[in-house]
Length: 548
Image (tube, rainbow, N blue to C red; front, side, top):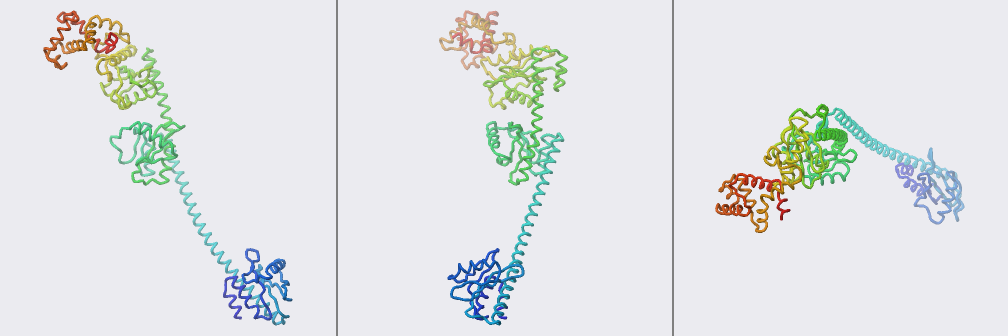
């Protein structure tokens, strides 16, 4: 009874087997040769087993396959393996030896000990199973809870993505353009959203803290930023902004960004920015295609106007492209040094003209860009805008007289070219804007680049002075030119040349002596004044250089 209580109080199967092996001798002339427990379907020897006959006993016990049976133990005539069986499984074996033949009562006691041991093992096994089941149930519950959490997260994420895609699709379908995209992004993220063109100029902003005025882009930094962002996948942080490129088919059409000064953006924010860029891409591509078609139509119409075209057709085509040809127009010719008159320069001129309020038809020639504009350009506005756009002031603009009819445009185009040429070949500032109707005398000095007649005329009247200046490093021609520019006023001329009045008188006398011309003679005075103007403005330094 005491042993039975001890067996059932122990829940460790190894201890139960050990107790049984320790108390086998109490049942009669017995000894415990070995003990085995079934672990995961295999018989595992007890640590109490003897080592002398271990291999032979192990082999015999496994051969019994769950049945009771005799076991050969050298030196002991009686040895038997007794199975420790539960209701559904074999829990192990007791290998018992006896020194003499046991009595019936001793066999009964041994059988009782085996049954109690088996029952205790069944209880321990059942307890272990319950404990393992409980642990497994707990694990399954924890796993289920985690899976439920993941499922809820996935469902929420899918719901957010569907809502985001639906919103962006609605925005794209609504035709709201860039402003609709930035409004949607601002509403989704709470962050200011903006769209810039590829050059860094703002196109749309939704949200607070918009800079006013918006900073003028730096072309070098802008290109470096586009390159850095383009090398990485997804949105990229650039200072306080999250930036992604809008580039359908690999061509960068713009930049979509969120202003995230506090770095609050999460994965949903990044996904919204990416989806916004995906929705904006076809919109910008469509606008780009429309702009290219419109530009082509504008260019073709401008080309026809410059060479002469049917008025009825021109008016109809101008209405189709949204340009009013019934207003008075001017022809503007733009040439920028070290810049070919290619597509990029034409686009730059078009942007600058729009920025200063000019409504124009634009085309280009081999070395200049031409605008047919519906209003007289401001004297400096277009030039200053182009200087900012190109980053250099080395450009020249010629503007024609007003066109009162479409038939005047080819002639006005020549006037604009003439104004540009006069500016380019002037001895003063080569760059800036020149209006044909302000040229005065230079309007009749001959078009184009053939200056032979002009050079002959200049040489006839100023050749001796030019040669004298070249040999003696003097400034007789410049003095004479300034004298005429000051209307023959001695004081103004001396002051402009930074010389004394007496020095001026001496130079004018030397000019009479060298040239043989009389400044008091009306005919000589007129020819000399025209010659100095041609030398100063039209021929520039060409005549002097060739003469020298």
